[in-house]
Image 1 (cartoon, rainbow, N blue to C red):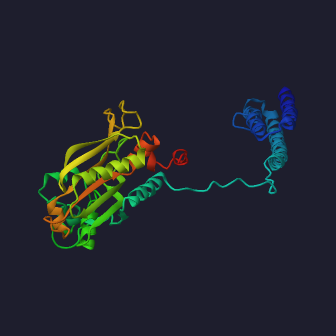
Image 2: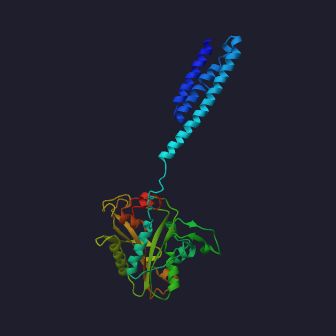
Image 3: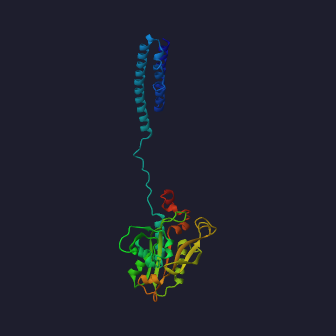
Length: 349
């Protein structure tokens, strides 16, 4: 009868422990201790075969009775604990609808849009109007009419995203524009034979490696002026005035010779790197200078393709990114932050 006494002791202790269980976790631990696969009741049920033959039926019957009793007690206790925990949550997590709501932060313009609007205002004061050209261009406008024929090595300067071909001939192939210069041809053909002074903003697309200072999708702002007697001095003066108005009146600017197929002569305009104060950093490639614009006098071939007689008309053109000047002005260390959708960055501006 010793086994029966031990069985009754387990029953009494189990009920005491069940009464003391006050949380779902404690209840699960109780169930595992007494009713689980290695629980006290389960282990006692496995000892039936070790008892004398005459005691086995009674002992097995008593084990089943105690198990049913404990299961019923467990279910009742589980319901009590569930109700208690629900009441606790309702009391502690209640929403007071009479309290004022959380303020909604109003949205604002993206940093790139802010920079574009500032650039519009600057060039607007210098007599330039905004002219918009399409993002999806014909090969002729993006290359051929800008003095970049198919065999020209300058095409290697841009890695192009091509769109499905339409029309006859290679010049009718469509692409995502690699620069905003195609808008020059469109503007000249639309305004000829009148003088022109326009800026052409928009996105450009190049299949390039993304770094701290270069993206495969970025904004550019193109400038074009066509008239009679326009010289390189007018170009340099325009760019210098832009730099003073955008970066500050004391900003240092330098001009150096370069090459672009659609301008002759061509120059690149640099300004002292604001991020490092000219000491050198990853953004300026440790030179202390950051290129802000490529420019030059409009090539005679491009003028002619636009409908102007290069013997009597001249003009200048320039182009620069929008994100990179913003990096310098607002101390942005990585161009990838512009479109990384990190609200911590976007809310700074």
